[in-house]
Image (cartoon, rainbow, N blue to C red):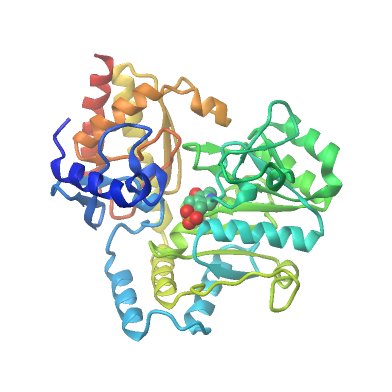
Amino acid sequence: MALQPRNAALFERAQRVIPGGVNSPVRAFRAVGGTPRFIARAEGPFLWDAEGNRYIDYIGSWGPMILGHGHPSVLAAVQQAALDGFSFGAPTEREIALAEAIIEQVPSVEMVRLVSSGTEAAMSALRLARGATGRPLIVKFEGCYHGHADALLVKGGSGMATFGHPTSAGVPAEVVQHTLVLPYNDLDALDAAFDAHGARIACAMVEPIAGNMNFVRAGDAFMRRLRERCTAAGALLVFDEVMTGFRVALGGAQSVYARRLPGFAPDLTVFGKVIGGGMPLAAFGGPRAVMEQLAPLGPVYQAGTLSGNPVATACGLATLQEIARPGYFDALAARTRSLVDGLQQAADEAGVPLVTDSEGGMFGFFFAAELPQRYDQVMATDKERFNRFFHAMLDRGVYLAPALYEAGFVSSAHGEAEIAHTVAAAREAFRSLRS
Ligand SMILES: *Cc1c(COP(=O)(O)O)cnc(C)c1O
């Protein structure tokens, strides 16, 4: 591996003043080893690190940068908004426009509330679901990440329909005693949980295409059953589309399921990432009757000093305007597909077992014989191979997510040349894995 003196010096300096040297754990490269790259700037599909090395970026800030970095119309909107003022703590017209833009694309959403992070949006949706139903229990699925609110930092116990255990120190067991954690894509566990506790379940929260265990789709049968059980129990189905919203399709993952399951829709939806275009912005939304339970209209309290920030909403709005252009998602999906097809072919040629999947501008790949359906299957894929592949690609100027349980993202700034460069790098990297 090439020496990284400047990145290494920055990492050392960072570790003196920031825990682990990073402000979000995965950035520290702990899963793959090596020195994290300190990014100096970005443009289009590229990142440049502190050494001046250029990388093709398949993280895109973990999803938001769907247009690539520094898209001209987004940049202009942000510059103008900044000139007009950073924050007012009072309503602005752009908040209405962004709410309208979200509602226009996602029919299940009649009203939205803007917040500043996906964590905050998921936490608020949970409180709203509990407040609206008057019930305490929530269902989540192993391998799905909904931000770091206490009640959601929980993993499943052994066996079916069990209450979970905290996955972080600082979360008392009492705080997660109302969180039921079920294996993903497991109909029997789902039925057992609703049979035993249905009348006390406020909501089930799910990543419809789970991007925090690489890329795992909820199967159609599982999704249909989840919808049926929530409806029958009077519980709300909450789609966490922080990653998939405006990323796998303009209408989010729910539009992908609605294509195959006519009439399908969740009750509440959580958004983040793409709707902020790289600025701190997230949202949650749903039917008017549920959303009107929020303060100041209803009894469910929720607030934020920087919520609906004028610079962030300008960035998000300009981003959504670009991706709503006719044909945008077809082109992005085709580009993403050409990447995963190229990776697949390169792996096949090298005799390396690999499986891939993608939807819209989001993709995943696993060193395994078949696509995993659940978290434990994801974690059982070949980690050592993944880590070697990750570094082999990084050395060749391709920046993939530094952990096997993360999804990948293609932007509309990624051109054929970048895909070809990536596939050529992968061909060499796969060959090196055999040795
Ligand atoms: C990123 C993510 C979150 C958390 O969003 P933050 O803005 O990091 O707080 C929640 N849910 C999903 C599905 C995510 O991918």
